[in-house]
Length: 135
Image (cartoon, rainbow, N blue to C red; front, side, top):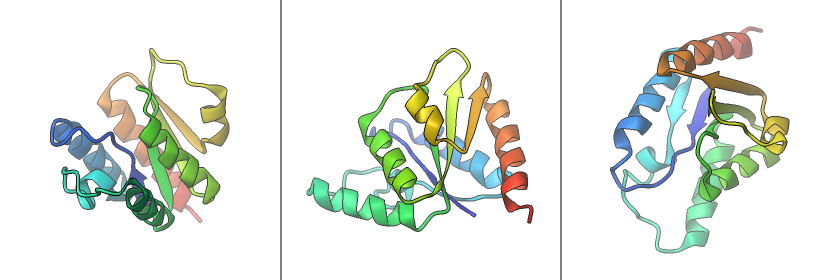
């Protein structure tokens, strides 16, 4: 099961946090995919915003699920969330336990992970993988 991991583009500034989240996804059993890491290689490579979104949409369609951290607001990542929902992909929302999320985000989530520590994320992703792949 392939997971599209949303991330905000900050050149290589947020590379460690992206890599950590990707490792949690892999450690839970999912195949990880992160557009910023796997397509853009932590660089701005698209000069045409329309091409960027066409490619992002194609990659989301190629995945089974999307992981979205709702702890911080982001328009770009929210667009990816909407694309995944429109494409009938499973959606996991991450949110720090001190943050409230909108009902609209709750309404499209298949799973919501409310975390205090990174260990909480890892454990919940393992549980979700086990449930989703049990047939």
